[in-house]
Image (cartoon, one colour):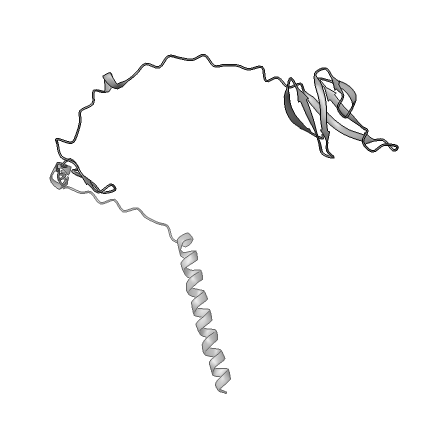
Length: 164
């Protein structure tokens, strides 16, 4: 019997709780809200209610907290900012011809007889070329060949090109 009474009390509690929640949720849609306008006869002046700001004057700093040095009026030097500015002549930028041709690396082929002879396929400015290791054409020279890139020299400058 005790268990049955406990279940009834808990059921009433849960129903009451959910009833309250649903009432609060639905009450905002059930009732018409009326706006009440209250006319005030008194007009407050903003000037009387505003507080005036407190002003203060800061003294110049006499001690550097980071360097632990004290400064007096004798230690400070006056610097004329106009006299200290030096005119620097404008230099023309030096433009070097750092042109590298548009090279694309497609891969290489090793020969069956001698593994040292490798044939490299590259495209230089839209022209497909087959070059051997150490061979030079149109200023391009093949220095080293790797699986994913090739080392080239052009106009005494060395650069790498990765495989497409």
